[in-house]
Length: 251
Image: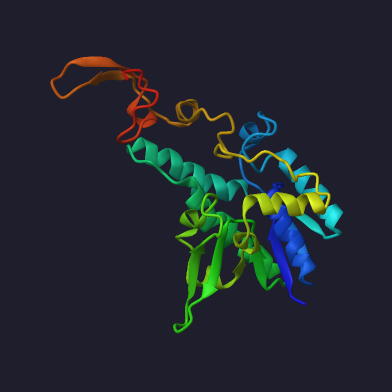
């Protein structure tokens, strides 16, 4: 029997991942990470992820599965590696990918360290992706999930070989409908929980408002075309990215 740590977000995917590992005979330890600053995570109940309500949902699932559950406060690391980078990239006019950075620096880097401290041999997640050993080379391959509509391999592309060797993704073999059905059969309260679509640290989806609050300098100015004609006004270049049209008010 292998001891594994399951990253439980409070959603249906990671909850079923924990159940699958227990069914396979592993010793399962559930962990939930608190990431977003308190003011962002607590202001919008049921939106985003990693909120206090998500922690409660994860605890309830852990109780239902009869597995231990721990909560890790990684807010400082999340602020340093994800939020600060997010703001910095927008200030430079670039579009950041906070989920990729979170997976690389928080969910797997820090989580693997905590897993080792718990004497666990692997970290399990509810991502729709797969990991396989290369048939002829000494390396691991990151593969798309069977459910291509839910595939999340693209946000995991920066994982190292060491990280890939320590991660299990049992949900990647199934489709979303199958996962919800499994959760129903297990009587898990999160079986029909709505998926989080917004960034966890911007649960209301107002990226421009978040950037205005976070950026030190955000100077309004005119929007002009190539001939110099003024088309409108912007609240600050840092609130937009290359190629953006939405929110400019000039469509």
